[in-house]
Amino acid sequence: MTIHRVVERHHVTTQNTKRIAFCTALLHLLDTNTLEDEILDIFMCDFIARVKKRYKYILAAKSRRFRKRKSWEEIKETLTETQFRRYFRMSRDCFEELCHGIEDIIGSEEFKSEKFIHDLEATEPKNSKTMVHLHRLSSGSFVSGEIKVALSLRLLAGGSYLDLALLFGISTRHVHRIFHAVVDKWFLNDCLVNIDGVGYCTDNNKMEHVARGFCESSEGVFAGCIGALDGWLVKIKKPSIKRDNVQNPSSS
Image (cartoon, rainbow, N blue to C red; front, top):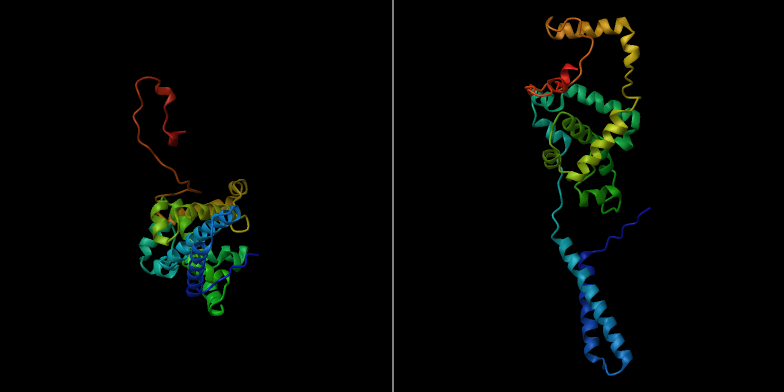
């Protein structure tokens, strides 16, 4: 377990100033005629350089700009129902049902919903040194499970990782780590959705039920449809040479 030591900045600054002043005064008093004094002189100069370097880092930490990450509730309220469905390819109710389903499978502590994080921060003692406090100082707060799910869905829907990093207040490298972790451990979890293609294609009742849903939602346009796959149809013109070797992917 990592233990983080928190020291008052004013106390550290005063200590470093006194150390530098003491070492500088000691160097002026020392007579460097002997070999021992020369070695001591080199040692003290190196020590002063290290103390100054540490003091520079402390001054930089004072002017650090702490990140304030937007919550999922704030982001969600800026979107209409149509915009939400267009961005994440599902309704708000479907999104919440997906998040609840993932949380039930992997547990509240791993999912870390916004409610879980708020309850954790509310019970945190003042001036504590817990990971909640350290996350708040470094990156703003924990990345909630809702943010992770929304980020992954938007990437799957064609969003740019650069825009998502700016929107959710997450570094670009962390965006990719979150996406792969959510897809591998959450979306592809058999306990969440178990897709049995062979079993579905041999069950006439399920296929009729799906076909009826397609027909009703499309007002009879998609009749007899038992499934759909997302794809990309590219209109191309075949070259005059080797026409048989060029084929539209969707026609295979």
